[in-house]
Picture 1 (cartoon, helix red, strand yellow):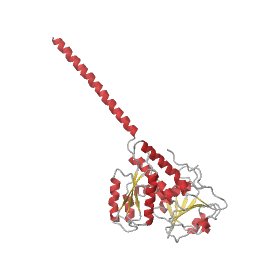
Picture 2 (cartoon, rainbow, N blue to C red):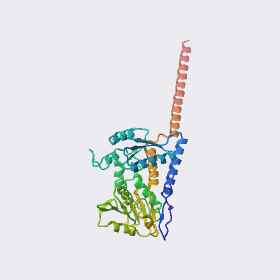
Picture 3 (tube, rainbow, N blue to C red):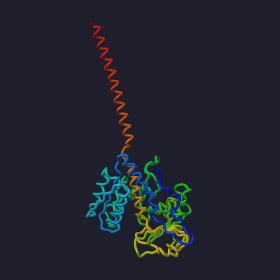
Picture 4 (tube, rainbow, N blue to C red):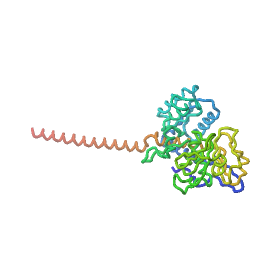
Length: 371
């Protein structure tokens, strides 16, 4: 089944003012694709993939994300099971159990659990948990295997066969899909790795969950990406991280695409930094821009929320994990194998009958000769 068409923009820019892109328009084709695959599986007598969520905190955003995930999965025919834990210390054991459970095809852990609390095995216990998720079940694409391949721009797990694609982090991937749907961002006429060639992009916030992987993904597609954080600004270019003397303002003014992901309601990107015809994507749960002022800037395309596309990418990652690592032998293959076995049994039976008949004939002939 072919992927949704990204060659046609989901919104048309207005040269006199800004316009908003409804993220659900981008999410819907991906979810319809999932529904079609699930329906085909059911018709073949197969159960759809199972996603297990692990929740061990009372963070409202994490609980809301868990609710959205379950609702979306059930609506699209996927199976979803939320496992809540009262004590965060139990998450590792529950995670290992899910990794080893053959019924489980995908795992999502709702962070934060320990936050930046130090762990015996590394700088952060949450980071340790991310690396504990098996790459065969990691729908978030944040385990060590997928992160390492992302930063090395390795797109397949099984080079040179290239049958198993690496998974990408859901939220960062949702931004890419939204940009593909915006006019003037991705050039689909160019080859993979060069579709953003000539573009300058600013990503504000360098978190390990969204900001850093997103900057790397956009750079891997050919863009110059300024990664802006509280204490530093780096340029992601051609697989290298370069320090630079830019300011947040100079980065934004140079950019035709700006992504904001600052997790606080007190931060607002100054609208006067935004140039005409810029695409602005807000990843944070808080609005990092003055929407009313931004939509007065001619040619601006604004995406206020990415959550619906993030959930669609989560489902897409789950289906890819299932197809690559968990799908049972195709029923037709099983039928063919059974037919071959029956044919072989029949051939041996015929040979045995012929051999028995020959022996019986020989014995009868010998008896006649004696008489």
